[in-house]
Image 1 (cartoon, rainbow, N blue to C red):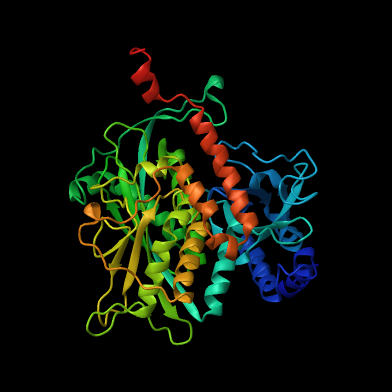
Image 2 (spheres, rainbow, N blue to C red):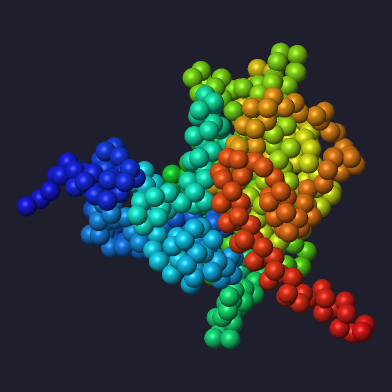
Length: 490
């Protein structure tokens, strides 16, 4: 007997996820629609994925017939996936009685639960027999995990809504694509992490926005653009960036959660599309390649009144900065150092903060100045008035990154802060410097009060432990610089 969509929705609405408040009746109806679309699209497998603490997609793939069960009861996965550093090592003591989250919590490598979001269903352009559904993460008993990526952003968005505000953001993402010359897949190349591939260039670079370089990359650009369009990502432009084999894609303005999901899908699609074609896509900030250039992730943002839709960043008729824009910028500046762990979460990202390199090195803002951390792009009567924060690296976890902007901006508003005078010579100003290393960012994150007071102290302790583990491994690894500097001299 064929079941109707109403029957399927009713069944999902009676499941474990609905019982614990993670699947509303509207969600259940969307889930039933997804099940019908899976059949209509001829989908064989569905990838249920969540963004881990590093902004890397993890999850499980299920056959089409198991999707209804996933919407009813969720999908189990090892809790250690939330407890790993970037080498995939578990850095919490999970084999004792307390891993650091209270007795019995996240111990024994037990399970957590993935909660599928039916609104995120998409057919994958690089695997057309497969679809993707993004998930939230909760405890196996249905209770919240306060440091899971989507939960952190939802917490920040709730605080924004409570104040009657809405954030609009637009993405500019720089990244590299190289040709793979050697995959490095011998047994001896494995490890935690394994050896990276050996690569060569697709274009020499240092010919910013020249049509000749774009023409060399056009076939690749077109494939990635079409992939974005298939996934429903609001792609706006494709550019040949400054460095060798460096590209930039920009996306139209959207809601923070939509854009966080879009960034996750874009990075994953790019890497998988490239891998299938003998290419290596990387969002590492500054790859160790000869004559390379660092990549940034520039986040455009403006704040609107939730009721009227008015852009509250639009300046006065005489050009005076609006009170909302002033307070928001002041909040971003005041909390920039402690936010760096979320905007620039890798050892490598701090090697981008160099003067005269179209990247910020200090905590300041300026009018249409690409050397400042915050670039203001507003003028009277311009409904697109906004700021651009140029601080982040493209490897950042988008949910954490967006949450940091919302919470810092809201703090500026709540306290009535005012932005200092804008700078015109950002590399010669006396503004405080951005953290010079990952450990400096960790220390600023731990010493700050923003995230302890908004997300909670467990979030600060959790992320600090993971990043300190990465830093400790970095410190104990003998670098090529050390070998070259000292091996012969001494």
